Length: 218
Image (cartoon, rainbow, N blue to C red; front, side):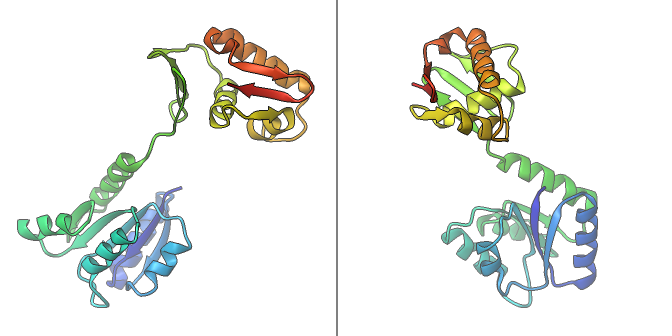
């Protein structure tokens, strides 16, 4: 679920945007001013900030500059009644990631939210020697060649091994990380790893078994 902070002093517009975005299954934190925003951001995981560029309670521009200086990298969309090209360009110069002129159609806001969050989504990539594992796309490549026929279990095992490469992983640890429980039998784990090795010959000698303990990728 996407977590969005909305800062808009117009009560009706604030409530309307909050309602419609909630209907789209976004988690909305609604504010009418910028007071205590920094403290809120320090204590909550936020993906996007939507804010009026000209809030009467404070300088939105200076706030964004301060947030950027302090290391906040959340995407920011400015909402503004200032529609001149200079105003829009100034908004981008001031640190926003997108600028929407008032009045606007809600569908425009929705599409821009989807576009900006898609751009800002970081792919989770793990690398081991000549292997590249794309977690999001569930693809493993060896020397730029895609390894076929990998199951979800295979990907989860690879993710665990690549994340903790060169470390001894107990069977209990593998059970917790991959099967999400602590009761998976040794035979089940051994069989899954054997099948993984059979599918990926280049990994066969890299995943070693430590008798009565577990496995290690090295």
